[in-house]
Amino acid sequence: MNRSTTSHWVKLMAGTAALGLVLTACGSEDSEPEATDNEPTSESSESPAPADDEFTNDECADGSSNADTFKAGGILPLTGNLAFLGPPEVAGVGMAVSDINAAGGVNGAQACHQIEDSGDTTDLSISTASARKLIQDEASVVIGAASSSVSLNFVDRLTAAKVTQVSPANTAVDLSGYSDFYFRTAPPDGIQGNALGSLISSDGFQKIAFIVFSDTYGTGLRDVVQETVEAGGGECTYGCKGDGDEFPAGQTTFSSEVSAAVNSNPDAIVILAFDETKAIVPELASTGWDMSATYFSDGNTADYSEDFESGTLTGAQGTIPGADAAQDFKDRLIAWNEFAFGDGLTDFAYAAESYDATILAALAAYKGGATDSETVQQNFAAVSGATDGEECTSYADCTAMLDEGNEVRYVGPSGIGPIDEENDPSSAFVGIYTFNEDNKNELTATVEGQKQS
Image 1 (spheres, rainbow, N blue to C red):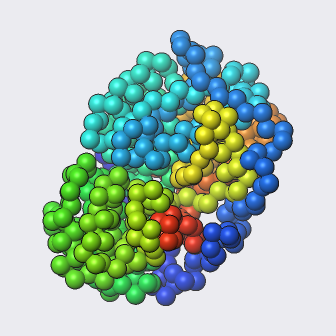
Image 2: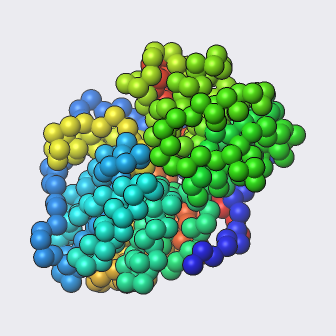
C-alpha cells in the first residue's frame, strides 16, 4: 500500500534572494561550514581515532536470532548503480554495533550486524532475496535500502513479517507514513527539492531542463525542483513533469536525451540519476554545454575524480540531505573501516544516518527490554525524542538515562529532529556541494528545514 502523505516540508527559502540569507557560508577544502545552534560542529583530529577506541567488527554468527542478540540487519548497495554509497553506510552500521557492544550491549545481549546486498532497480530479485533471508534469520532491525524504489520492492514483505525497517537514505515522499514498521533517518525529497530549486533560482537561472530517470526517487525530486523554480517565476524546457521524457534505470547511452535537453535552450540542466551520470556527463560536456550550469542531487553528487577529465565539472553543484558530520566522527569511521576491511573511506554520504538508525534501533530495544523487532518498532520514535525526552548524544549516555527511568532524545551525528507521526525526521539538514577542478564535490553551504503537518 502507498498511502498519500498529509504533511509538507516547510519551504527553506522565501524567494530566491532569501537563499543567500539561509545558507551557511563555507570556504574551500581547508575550511568547514560555520556551525548553527543545532548542527554538529566539525573539529579536526590529529589521529584517525581516539587512543581509547578499541573497535570490533561484530558480524552475526550463523544461527543467531533476535531472541538473545540485537541483530542489526542491512539491505545496502554492495553492487549496482548505488554501490558507491555502500561503504559509508556499511561502516555506519558496523561502527554503531561496535559502540553498542563497547557500552555493554542491549540489556546484556550482544549486538551484531548482518549486511546483505540490495542491488538496484535493474535486478530487484537481489533485494527480495535479502529481505527474505533477514526475515528468516530473525533480524531485530533492517537498515536500508539506499534506493527508495528498492525499499518499495520489499517494505511490504518486512511489514507483513513485523520486521522494523529504517532507511538511512530513502527520500521519496511516497514512503512518508507508508507503514508502521517503516522509518527513516533521511528527510523526504520535499526539503531537498526545495533547497535545490531555490539554489538554481538564486544562481539566476530561470529556464531549466531535466535529464531524469523513471524512478520514484528521480521523478519525485524532479517534481519538487520544477515546482520550486516555477514558483520563483521560472519555467521547465525539457524533461518536465507529465512530458514522458524520463529514461529507464540502467540505460547506457544518452545522446538523444542530452541533445533534446540542450536544444530546448535552458539556462541550467538538472541531472537526476545514479551511476548513469557517468555516461551522461561526457555526452553533455561534448556539446559545449557550460558544466557550471549543471546541478546534481544526492543520487549522483559524488567524487568523480577517477571518472572524468580534470576540470569537467568545475563549478557544477549538487545537494545531499544530512548534516556534515563532525570531523571526529569521520575520523572514527575511517579508523573502523580500516580495522574491519583494511581500507579507509573517501565518501561519507549517509554514514551518519546509518549510524544513527542503528543506535536508535538499539536504544528502542533497550527501552523496551527486548531485542525482537516489534519491541524496536514500538519504542523507536520515543527514543528519538518524540516523547520530549532529555537530550543525550551517545548510546552509553542514553542507556544510563534510561536506567534512571528518564525519557530520552538521542541526538546523533546526522542532526535529525525527533521522528514524527509519519515516521520521518521532523527536521533535517541539506548540504550544498560544489565540484572543484578535480571533479570532487566539496561542501560549500548547509541549510536546515523543519517538517510541519
